[in-house]
Length: 285
Image 1 (tube, one colour):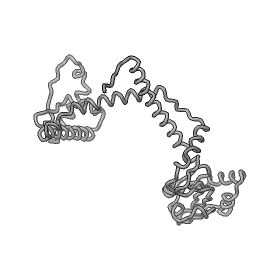
Image 2: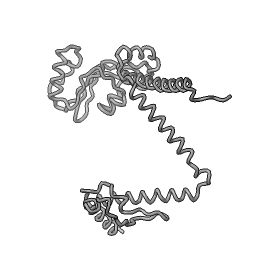
Image 3: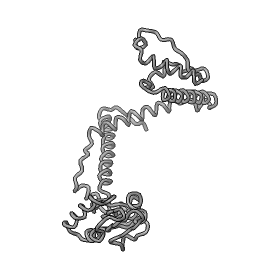
């Protein structure tokens, strides 16, 4: 069986590269390569599988998978015809409904694409946040922090701790220079909010699970190969209102989605009003 499949693959690859078989006026003898019930899969039906330039082993795997899938789908279809009650086989109405729904969806999508304004001002986003602040509840504790992860034996640990503690641009520059030179990993952007899961995955399990961020300010975590120094800048607890900067991108998406819904409603209203003026519909009571 494997030898026979290799034969078909070689023939298919030869066919793909042969100008003779590219000419539509030339008739090609069809060769069956699989059967499912009374249906056959022919060699010319799998000529577009992208086998040109593929290794023989890869070609064999691709063809085998295609043939097996073809047989499975044809057999399932045949068994469905044989075993489903007649009312389950009548899918014309379902196909018609799906086709019409898809056409309407495509029309609405294109209308929205042509008319949607995706620009959002900062004032608009902030106003939405203030009006809906109670809807933005945190699911987890979040934190803004600075941290530097250094290998064991890195110099000037005491200076590093001082630079982290001091809120001063000069100290930040020293901290940044030190981190670029010695750190294994660091974050010196204190405007980014992180939840505990992200801190656990990206920084340290101990920092996420062991420490109470509401009480900690400078945290020191030592391991056999590294030390992490972290300063908590700010934090929010779960169930409290999310900070604006934490949900800003989500709000922009909400505003855009609201505009999409409004455009969809406008399209429906415009169609109904136009149809009413032109007497294109009636509702009989």
